[in-house]
Amino acid sequence: MKATDQYFDGIAEKFARNIYGTTKGRLRHLLLLEVLTPYLDNRTPMKVADIGGGTGIMSKAIADFGHCVHLFDASEDILSLAQEFVSDDENIQVFLANIQHIENLSTYDFVVCHAVLEWLAAPLDTLAGIYHKMKPGARLSLSFFNKDAALFGNALYGNFDYIAKGMKVKNQVRLNPNNPLSPQIVLSSARDMGFDVERISGIRCFHDYMKEKQLSDEQFSQLLALEKNYMEAEPYCWLGKYMHFMLKKI
Ligand SMILES: C[S@@+](CC[C@H](N)C(=O)[O-])C[C@H]1O[C@@H](n2cnc3c(N)ncnc32)[C@H](O)[C@@H]1O
Image 1 (cartoon, rainbow, N blue to C red):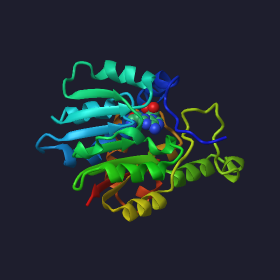
Image 2: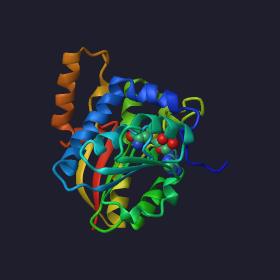
Image 3: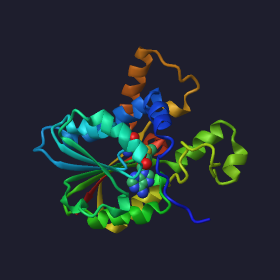
Image 4: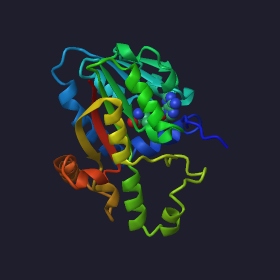
């Protein structure tokens, strides 16, 4: 059977609850914001495309810096949650679109593509397509599910059979991405395409490996500070559950 991209129709509510209603989701969002803030703060208003933007949490945060954001997603279910979430924000517009078919990407100063590549049948081809459509000088904030971290985490849990079978996801675990990516492969592909890699960060380098994940507010703050301190430091950054690359089209 031919692989297809996985839109979030039918699992939108579950995604919103499981991902953003948890420590995991909060940490991911706060750490991504930490990386993005220097590119958003005190800048003349930019035109931003949040592609595969989901429920709009990041679009909203970016719009709060005064930028104009267009959120694109291929899932109608996801977009109705996004529409509800951003309805009172006139700096955000929401569009039903497949990433591969966004034709006006060259009009944006800043493109956000977070946690989408791992759901695509052909992630690197899609990345090349994004590169070709972007205008020179524009940036791509790219984050994706890290295959190396997935292997490491599964080893810690003793999931040896799962690793031996190539960590292939059964259909029922639908919030587990089909297609985690190797950071080194994405990095070298991005460089070959012509991107300048400005910044490399690991998103959640420690949290997912912790034995005790029930955290008090104080422990959460301490963990957040630790994650921020080490997110760009070797070797920790390479084991972030997600990788983040800030890429500039030169
Ligand atoms: C894990 S969610 C990430 C959402 C958001 N970027 C975030 O970081 O929370 C992945 C999103 O990609 C969307 N998606 C998957 N394939 C797509 C495609 N080919 N074109 C547009 N959106 C797509 C899904 O519908 C889903 O909303």
